[in-house]
Figure 1 (cartoon, helix red, strand yellow):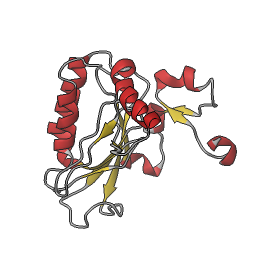
Figure 2: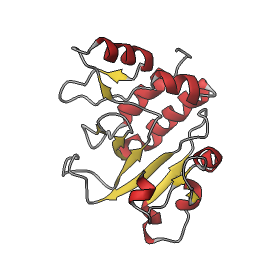
Figure 3: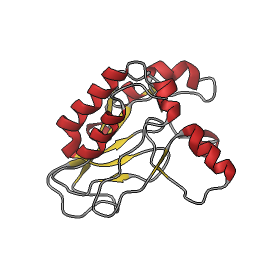
Figure 4: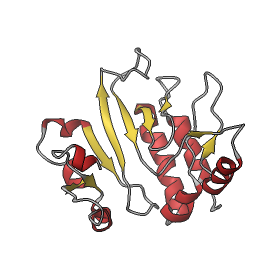
Amino acid sequence: VWKSRFPHLQVVCPETAKPRVSEVVSVDMSIEAFTHTEQPWCKWVHSKVIDGWRDFENVIEVELENHPPPLLPKKRNGTKQAMIVCDLLFTVPFKKHASYGERFLMWLLDSSIDLPVEGNIMVPKVARLSRIFAIQDWSKAEMWYRHYAANYGTQIAVILVGHGPPVVEVNSSEGCTEALEGVANQLRRPHW
């Protein structure tokens, strides 16, 4: 649909996902090639593979420089990044007064979260579908998120997910470290 509406759009996906994605839409290049082309914006876009996850999705990082999106506080320390994922993490708000059908879907997908009180950071959820189909090695996935939180968490100002509102840093000196540690905590042991 997007390709027909925007014919000049370039479709990009992880190298390992190209065969399956190509069944649906023509793929112009892999994300690995996309982040290494000689375009001026390449210095601001990076791709990371998550250890322990199947190879259908990467983490995309976009450097925000000194121009924060409207969601972020204006005062920040240093250059920050946005972390972008699609189906790896969810932040769908829990609906207290959901219909029976919505309740069944919430149970089945197990992707809903309680929104945090003001002043606390939102922790994305590793949904049931991700836990079943995306994780190959739980301990590697947990360690990847712990390492990412410890080494890059303070640089991440916002986590953009494909399903639900964005996770936005509460304290610029901590970034999204606590949210990323919360993801790692969900990966301590296999659970469905």
